[in-house]
Length: 316
Image (tube, rainbow, N blue to C red; front, side, top):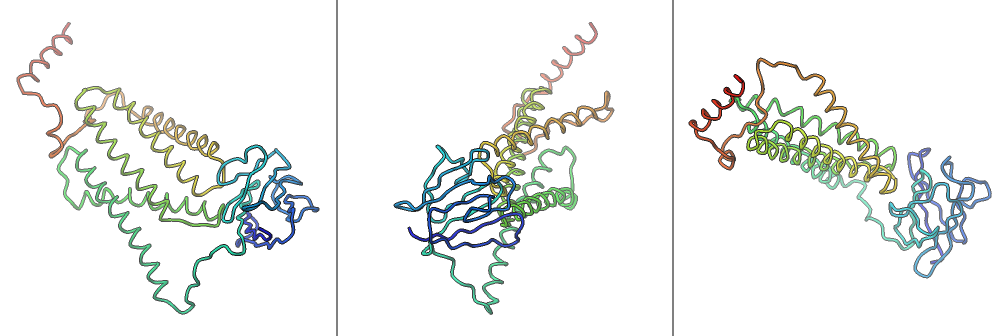
C-alpha cells in the first residue's frame, strides 16, 4: 500500500487531525526531525517508524520507555504489522490508520430531520427499556428481601434511587470516554451498569438462601464481599476498556485495585458502625413465595426442641 491516512486524537484537540502520507518510511515522535510530531510528554523523541508492507504497513519501535499499544496489546518483539482500520496508542495519543480506499459511513441528509429524530428515538427507547428492566427487577428484589408488607407505591419510590445511581454512573464513564477517546457511548456504559445491578440482585438472593439454610452469620457476609468484589472488578474492567486506552494487564490490575479497595472500605465502615446491641434486629434472610418453597423447612415441634437445647446450654 503506497498511501496512508492517519487519524490523530490527542488531549489538545477537540476534533481529530488527519494526515495524508504518501512517502515512507514515516517517523513519528516528539522530536522536530520527525514526519509527524506529537505533543505528548509520554512519547519519545523518536518513538516509531512505519514502512510499507505487502498487506499493509510495518511498524518498528525505536524507543522502549513507553511501548505502543496495537489493538489494546503491547507491541511484541518491537514490531508489528498494521492494517487499515487498526488503532495504535503512542503514549496517551490515539492514532487510527486507514487506506484511501477504506469504506466510510454513508452521508447523512442535511435536511433529513426524520432520520435524526429516528436515531434519537431509538437510543431513547433503548435507554428507557434498560431503566425499566432495572426498576422492575429492583422492586421485585425489595419485595423478596423485605419482611414487612409494603404497598406498591412505596416499593416504586424506594427503588428509584438505584435507577438514578445507574444513570449517574453511566454518565460519569461516558464523560471519561469523551475526554480520553472523544467517543461517548452512553448506551454501552448503562448496559454494563445495569448488568452489575441485576447480577448483584441475583447473587444477593442466592446468598439469602445460603443464610436461611445454613443459619450461619459469617458465611453469608464472606460470600457477599467476595461476589461484590468480583462484580465490581468486572464492571470497572469493562468500563475502563471502553473508555480508556491502556493495556489489558493495566486494566486488570487497576480494576482489581479499585474494586477490592472499595469493598474493603465499605466493609470496614459497615463493621465499625455495627451496634454492640440492637433491640430491633433485622433478619438477614427473608424468603417469600413463590421461591420460598425451595428452601428447607422445619416443623414447629422441631423448632421448639432445638430452642430448648439452646436454653439448656445457656443455663449451664
